[in-house]
Image (cartoon, rainbow, N blue to C red; front, side, top):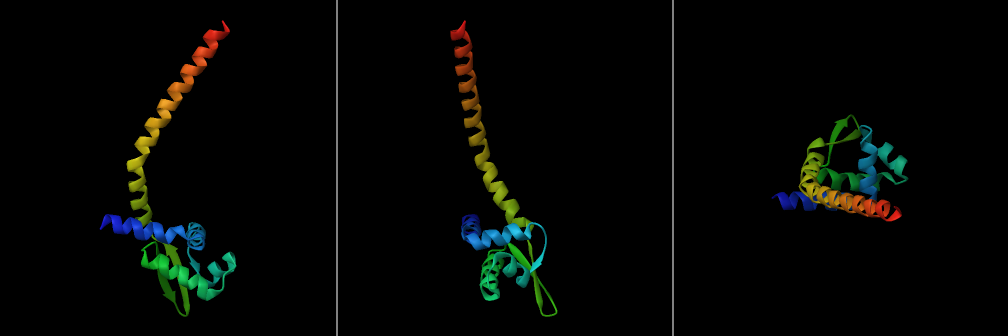
Amino acid sequence: MYIQFMKTTLNALAESNRLHIVELLRDGPLTVGEIAERLGLNQPQASKHLRVLNNAGLVEVQAMANRRIYKLRAEPFKEIDEWLKSYRHIWNERFDRLDEYLQDLQGKEVNHDD
């Protein structure tokens, strides 16, 4: 189940227009028309991308009269952060080893200059 969630989420975000929509929605809710205008898309294109994001659970929609207002859902992004956290310790260890190596090199250069 978790793998399917990540696959769906990352596939939804892999398309550049959808990633741009997510970036726009970081600043707050927007209507389909506002999203389409800011991205230079026609409204049916924007709606298609929003449908994919909605199906992936990344956004939610609220109907107000004849307008649809979209906003980001926090939960999927927390899940992505948790998933990435499992890899951060690997990178932190590698950066720590690189830092130690660079300090060793600098120490050798200082001793070599003497």
